Amino acid sequence: SSWRLPPLSDLAAQRLRRVGIPVVLIDNPVAGLACDWVGIDDYGASAQATQHLLDLGHRNIGFYTHTVTSAIPAQDAERLLGYLDTMRGSAHDTAALPLSLTGLSNAALWDKLTDEMRASLYFEPQADHVRAGIAGAADLVSRQPRPSAVVVGDNHLAESLQTDLERRGVRVPEDMAIVAIGDIAYYAGRPTTLTCIHQPFELMAQRAARLL
Image 1 (cartoon, rainbow, N blue to C red):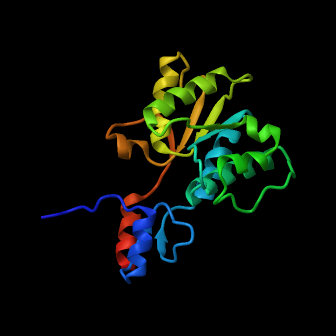
Image 2: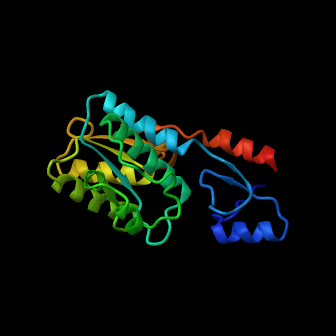
């Protein structure tokens, strides 16, 4: 027989560590928690996604990610920084950015960005991925000039965003290209037409198990 644990919260992981139970995190590290972690290079994945769109000739590229009211998770921060650095590099922009965005709120992050950077960022307004995709599509379509491409920092957001863009008559990728970080088909259980940065989940789980 087999059994599964419910999703592990940051607080639960910290409590397990305090009582001496070994913990290995998969995919998303917890800031300040001293334990092993297995995941991809989130900064590099985002930079690769952004560079792919630049190589295709896109220059007005947006970045769509989660809204947070407290602190930006390490994974989201690395993906955002990878996008920003790649876009700045393509424009030969030497404006200073903090070495790490982890722990900043959206408001604090906003204060550190130039007007041009702010214009390229889109934050989900809802916790629900489907509603977030609808609102995100409305925001993307209404912006002038409208982005010709967008890097999406979460595979769930990318799928719902594509669905609502197409409902609005925006063809993907003909009218707006999307590159998602993460394997959409892995979660959706069906093929996807989106370009995705692969996350080797089975290999990550195997390595995490060996660490224990």
